[in-house]
Length: 215
Image 1: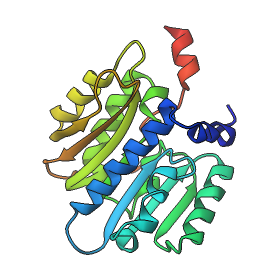
Image 2 (image 1 turned 120 degrees about the vertical axis):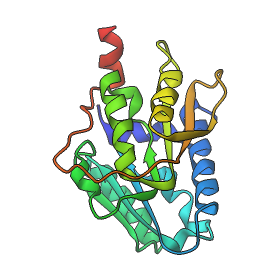
Image 3 (image 1 turned 90 degrees about the vertical axis):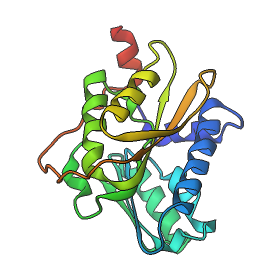
Image 4 (image 1 turned 180 degrees about the horizontal axis):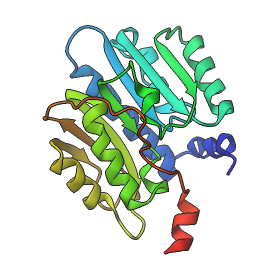
């Protein structure tokens, strides 16, 4: 998969992915508005070109309060994200070319006020989805939010994902309606943040097409 070219799908007006991006951006806006005063921390797993967060921060009142680490394996997408942050004078944004599945890459930026897991759950097996959700108790601060996405194609894993979050002390704040193909969810952490377990791999990025062909 050419993941830089894949990003062009967001530019197709009113496509499911374009609508998903707008929804995620609105969730980020609302989450930042509800954060306490002072510096804020955000981490993004498999961040792509950072269109979700970087589409919000330049015009958001809390934009300059945010320190963020965007972790993405494709160096071309990382370059695009870094240039976008630089052009917007967002000096607190780090775009890192690294394997987002390795929890060590978030050390020093967690626990975060906002954890973005967008475009991940549809590309990994169920066990890795649950493992990643479990790790959110290390990545997210108490009162912070995880904003996540998952398509609703068969088998629809959104109810399962919600259940896994809620079993671990995350309160469901909002999930898109069942008839929206690209689901977006927001879960707020009401539990106690756990120590970061360095050396942990959260998932193996399989890819949606391979997962579908295996079913």
